[in-house]
Image 1 (cartoon, one colour):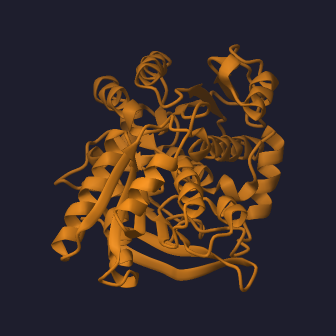
Image 2: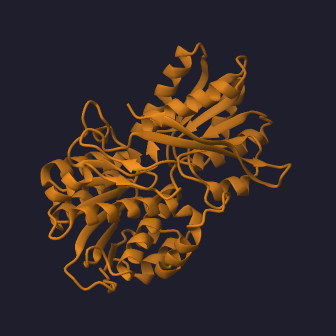
Image 3: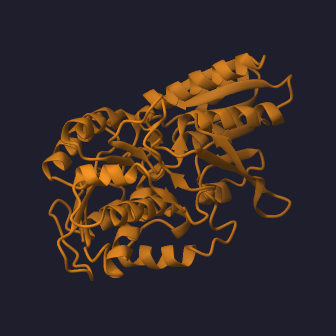
Amino acid sequence: MVSHWFQDKSRMPAARLLLAAAVSGVTPVAVQAAAQGEPYSVGLSGYITGPGAADHAPSVEGFRAYIERVNARGGINGHPVKLSVLDDRAEPARGADNARRLADEKHHLVTWASLSPTYRPALASAEESGVPLMFIGNASCPDQALPKPKAHPMVFCASSILIGPDLEFVVQYALKLAPFSTKIGLLAADIPISRFGADTQEKQFQSAGRQVAEKLALPLATSDYGPAATRFLSAGVGWINQWGPFGQVVGVLRAARSQGWKGTLLSSVPFENELEKIRDDKLLLATAVAFAKTVKHPGLREIEEAGRAIGATFQPNQLTAGWVGGIVVEAALKACGWPCTPAQLAKAMGTLNVDTQGFFGGPIDWTPENHARSKAYYQVYRWSSEKGSIVRELDWTAIPIR
């Protein structure tokens, strides 16, 4: 059973309006599941509409699809999962409102699939309410889930983006491929975690004896990427590392190519379909989520069926990061049993080890000290004009989470 509260319908893209209309917009709609017991209750705040929502809205759909699949199979421990979905548009004020609302709803678990400007109220709510908070999809994992030296007891990550390992991997990959004479550029969004990513990469490049010729942090609402492209070209940049919303990749790359740029852009957003659309041989995507369509993942058929059942507006291979979140939630609730309190759930989650079924490179394995995982895994893909398809440049490579 799923409840939705989609806000600010006047500003939704057409596909999102259709989805909102299907569930009656601002009114909760309960979808009866096969299981009939008292439900587990899960809340979700996600970046569903607004500029750049395409990075996170597919994760919300993938998560919803998995939960409805679970309910159709009879629920968990004989109980359905009631899911409440809120749209925060990646806006701090909406994130704060959603955190308060989800706390008032008394869930067993709250999940988050949005950008870093919404994190502070979510983390504060987990601290105050004692309800575990789990980041899913393409959300960045906050430090509170990492072993520094010990994770917060209520904060967990089953998301694809792990800041430290992600940055370490993309810098090392750039150092391996970009000749020493090539000037490096860094591209980020003007939001806290993305700016931090650019600053951290700059320090790592400098430690390796490489200077960053240009570093830009662009507003999320940027529509004209020409000036940014001009700055990279004027600085003589031949390689750009981008760490932020994927819309930047499309905008800056197109603008730079129109100005004659011949360099390479490396991004860490798992957008398989966009890579196929852009068809640029020098656009590299480093990803913690397998390109399921490219590798012909056998689980895509089930995701397609589950997506169809909820009226998903994104393609099956775009739902995989959110689907993994659903896998982890099912395992956590199953381990907690029934009855299950938020405190009992958090304790059960602290020793969880979940097979991600090949969608990630390894398991989500949590310990009381580490609520992220023991290792992050990465692949690299690009478009090959010669083969007329996406090709995998690098298979799963592990980075320990320290």
